[in-house]
Length: 198
Image (tube, rainbow, N blue to C red; front, top):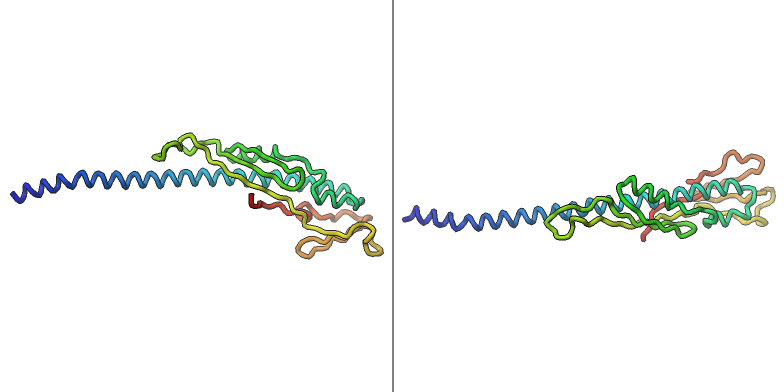
């Protein structure tokens, strides 16, 4: 009788064991699904960040080139440092997003910032969480171009200087000689490009 009761107890425990194992497997798959979503979200954010920065760097380089061309006409400097003349480089953002296996929508504010909305090309995939199979991860990024230099406007320059001195970050002064313009500041000296809060 005792042995039979033991078998009966074992028979009652088996369904409980199956239920517990099934519950643990469901929790494990749920955590896996969350992990999948997090990975895709990171991929989308990487694509958005890279795309926004690439577009902003293209515009920064363009503005630096415009400044170099206008270096002998300081009346044009302020406009260039405010973003005048920089063209929309959203095509570059879309290109970079594609290289990161994502699609992108880009908006240029016309001066010194880009906003990019990126979505992964591949969906999150099948999981125990309903409705995730066809979902794509999305992320936004904003990149800004920040002028790094100040200068004294023409007419207020110290005697002997025909071009304003550029006073840039890190306490770097660029004293420009109109007769020798071989050593001009580069794009990274004139402008900083960084991500900003959306």
